[in-house]
Image (cartoon, rainbow, N blue to C red; front, side):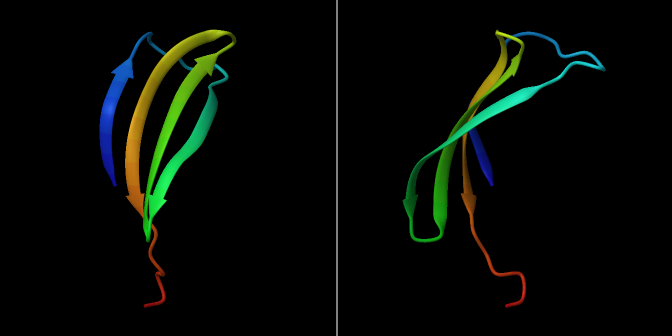
Length: 59
């Protein structure tokens, strides 16, 4: 997995309810690209884009 364009906008403290909104941007074979945002209430705490490769762990 590789992380691109990560921004941490506000600190998150213990006992915060962190809500993640994640969207798949595109796929190319086994490689998927995602973007997501993290919120506490209506306040955006972080956002990032990342890529991940889907693998079969039995092979």
